[in-house]
Length: 377
Ligand code: ATP
Ligand code: MG
Image (cartoon, rainbow, N blue to C red; front, side, top):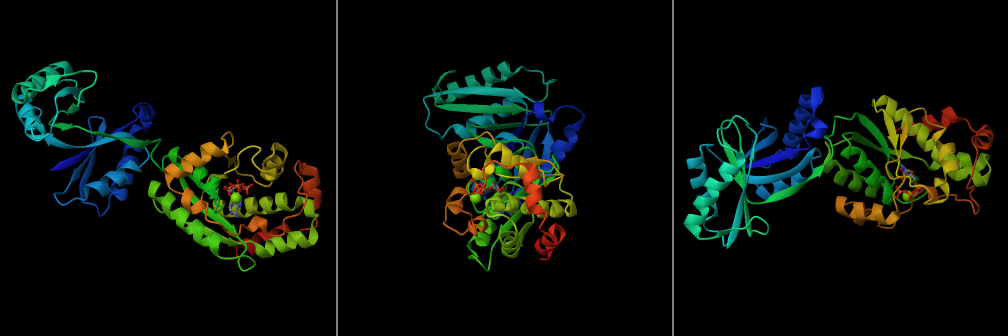
């Protein structure tokens, strides 16, 4: 019977909050591995152990575990007794068919009362492997590393470690509402907040039927990819075309982009409050486009009362693209679509607005009516 042995970042999970974090992590792992053949998930000796059924789909389990936030690294390994005589035989049985000329043993103890030190275990198991296989011990560049973890009632061993997603378990940081466009940036912003333990709901503004349905299909696919890193969450698709039309009809053209954004912020905030989300999230990065100057960011944020989080604010486009590729959203984001903000775009959008001029421009709009138009879905 195989097991996943997963390690979390000790430092992040210290103190009184530890059971809360660890329980969330276990919950999330159970949810993520549902249907893959994981029988049991428990916290033991400072690591998480998942027991796999004999017909478990190992690659799928590994893929799912690799996407759960809160895990630094993990391995697929075997369980045995922590009696070193039994342990050394079990290790040998599992590695004797592997081809290796050099090896090392690396033991960690999750049970400090164990009568042998980690080095003792390294030496005893190492000597046994050496005697049986003739391979030499190489502590710096071994062809094979045998990792052993000694716990209070059992031991685990494995020969390969996989990188975890890092971060904090989703659900430990509260809920946030992400303004999700079909573009490259906002999916990465949502991912970064999940990584800090937030569960993220998505709000997308589209201009259907003025523009195509493509952006809605794209965000649907993007949300599905992002939900692999959290539990499934809601995606709100807000018809924005008629709201834009009102803005276009009544307000000065150069303020349109900022006014669109302020309406997006207000409608998202109304949804956030209904859904008990504590903050808004955008994919803004300073200076990337005209609407992302500090002045315009200030004008847009002024429409919000909840905090607006911008996890990408100091990142370059190249860095964001790199992340989007790793997360898996990039290929969908670059599919050409018709973004609602391309609708009625003025020739000379105001690059540096002030709150005063924006509020003056907005006086002609019936804001509560526009908000309820967006919410009437
Ligand atoms: P992205 O790559 O996320 O589309 P961007 O570089 O195109 O961002 P902007 O168009 O200025 O930048 O949008 C800034 C942020 O506003 C986006 O990251 C997103 O959070 C939000 N946003 C823009 N358009 C929409 C939309 N149609 N629906 C929801 N949110 C949007
Ligand atoms: Mg965009």
